[in-house]
Length: 138
Image (cartoon, rainbow, N blue to C red; front, side, top):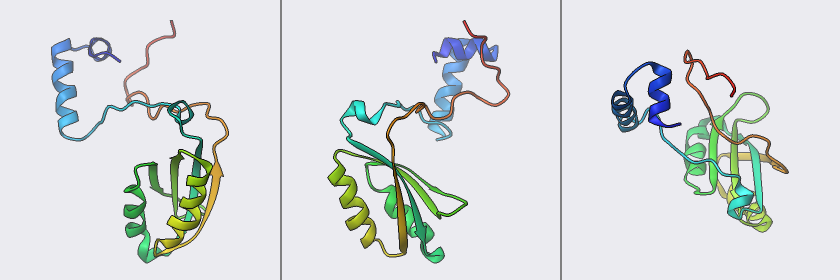
């Protein structure tokens, strides 16, 4: 969304919108990123991987996993898995090696369960701001 559109929606001037946007970016409150379909970037396999972790090792394991460049997200979750990660792999062999070699070597991981992504219907991240109405459909 352009800063002109942000300004219009918030009822402020465009220079004010640009200044506020720069400020919240500098404070680390938001990051601007591009979202692309992994297959369009040459990744053959994407997967969600649920990971069972020893409780005392949860933080250390999460820090280890987030260091991998191909890991898109790492989250502590409720339910059957302690951690859930999403990762993109150039080849199926890379996915295999990650699951059976890399994860197996991380101290504190008890087990993992993989879910390959066959098709993605939405991959945009969060959109919108609570309390700010979306514009009417055009």
